[in-house]
Length: 114
Image (cartoon, rainbow, N blue to C red; front, side, top):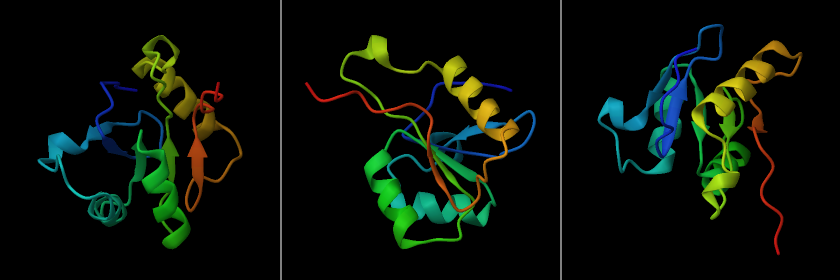
């Protein structure tokens, strides 16, 4: 799996040797979330994002999508997943019996409130 820094949102193909494509690589930085969501669906790709709240809402509003994987970020950056950890979490999910299409998967739990 090729990994790179996760941009605002990334679109990838859920399959062996997944390729992550950052929204910026598609010339879509700053694109509103509903348009990023629609782009992922038109490309038949799973969406990978740090924007958990907005894309969870889109998941609820627009069922039947190709899947969303969310990665929470903490203000303490040492607690955040690095690209290798994200790739490992995706691989574990892909090889499990869990359905990806149509679901919202959190790859790491949010940090507890203090």
